[in-house]
Length: 279
Image 1: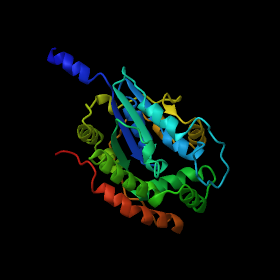
Image 2: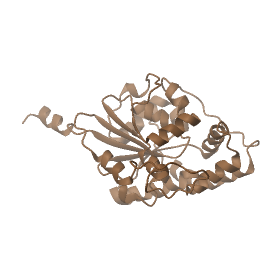
Image 3: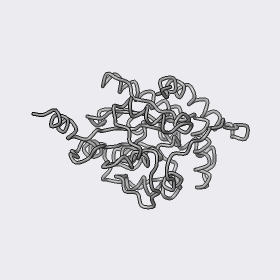
Image 4: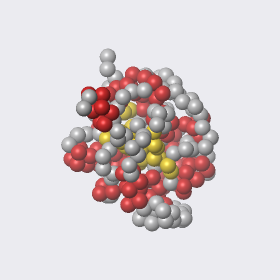
């Protein structure tokens, strides 16, 4: 058997990458980016769909939600473990809070990564998003807490990181959104190297889309279409080099500043373990 044939067989199964996050961390832009990797199957927020709308859900939301009988945790796990022998990459993006307490439902065969962002920015962005739906700051915080999220979701990321390291023997690869925005190519190259995933230029530029081609929870997709959560990412055409600025918290309601303070220690734990660009 030639070395070329060995290499072909080694590449016969797709790489499987799960990207975990919490709200407003540029994660949908990462889906646009890795959705453009080439020959990729994308699963977007299926666990979040099961967590919020599925028959297994224990979420106590302020408003009643229609149950999506197809979104069970077992069905999500089965979908993510299905063979896709003709694909180069299976890419999953989901929320860590959706699997807290359900780690037995995590898919096997995946490499795991996180994208995080300063909670001052995630909370401020969440406030702007929910305001468009007529939700007040108090209602926004109530919604976060009603979903059982620890530290605005960052605590759930820390718990998941600890579990993954114990389960798989290595920690997840962590990417910070501010680092990514300052130098997208350098950070994506470093990110891919840490994941043992070949970097492709197609991660940097893509075409905007109006119809989402990914595997989604129908109920979750309907909610995000209504509130515009995906809007900016879907209209984007690539990463733009920017210099992220600190958030002015002076006009932020006290309840949101308290949520930021709750999230910050967890964020700092993850931030200290993030991938850094190579010099």
